[in-house]
Image 1 (cartoon, rainbow, N blue to C red):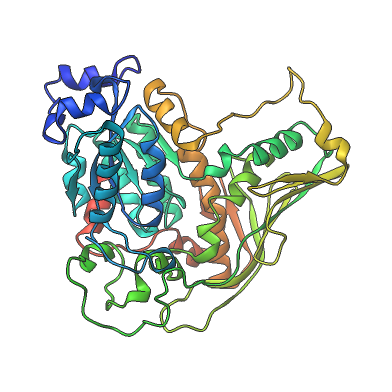
Image 2: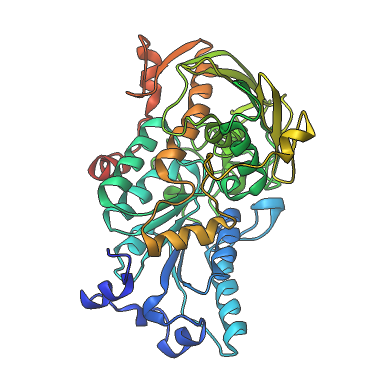
Length: 451
């Protein structure tokens, strides 16, 4: 769509039926922007991150949240045991608009099947904030439907799915912002600019310190025995393309990340953050390492949770830089060069020498993409059609590092990687792990929409 008038394109195509979602008078009073100029956003995933992301988008006067989709109506088991679900988030969104306008608002629709959302011609963009094993198919279908996408990290469950997602976004010319929000943090941007401009000399080693363990975020860790599926929770749909499994509370909602069928543990949960910053500072955003070595891990003793709780591996790049990813390193990202080092986490940054921090990046030097609000940057790009701060190909290359590490830890082997062709060198066992089998009928859906 042309960046100059996205909403008018929809109207001229005879598709402007958004009035069924919310009354025009209420829509007009929700924002200074006219209804025809705002982005109708559907939320797919009403759990912890979906709720947080929705709250952020509500602050943008250019956005109208019009639909909430989740397979769970309402229950506990989310972050710190709180209650969440599509009904909870719908009420929160409607309360927000009611308080903002001073009029009762009841224009948000609920859905349990994301496909119904993607079929709607009055939805411009979607937020995908569901478990990792469910990222690829909704993104592929949304891209096919020409809807812009904010997809939570990690981008994909596998390297193969990530490649398909990146290809689809490019083919269908849609905007995808990945929820790797550290790119919109000035601490990380600052140290990456210092590294890219040679302030620490020749880069030698990068250290990514990620969290360890399998924290019981949902307070369901001890509730691991099979039991009846709760009313108003479509567990079959929640499993989707993942293998069939008996329902138990510890398996779903926020704690899904500790099960390999759905995620990759702390390594992939944070793999879209610190390794992503490492790639930014190394100027390797569109490539990757050539070797994964010295991989080792240990898992927590739990009947269901089986991801690595302690881990270590090294990713060696063609230029000789060694990226160390470990649960035992200092938390954050540390760049070490021949003339010093810099470090950052989300709240601060530092250097081996204060003079490095005081350095001014000149006009003719490298200035990295600046974003101070990850959500607004996405909406900016929906209008401008420019690339966002965390685009799909960059996100795919970043999370690939974590996937490579997990594969090396499972196989307990050093692995050679071809980043151009995204294949392991002379290792078919490892190559078979680039993609996982999907359960019917979702395997056919993936094949239909993948690019």
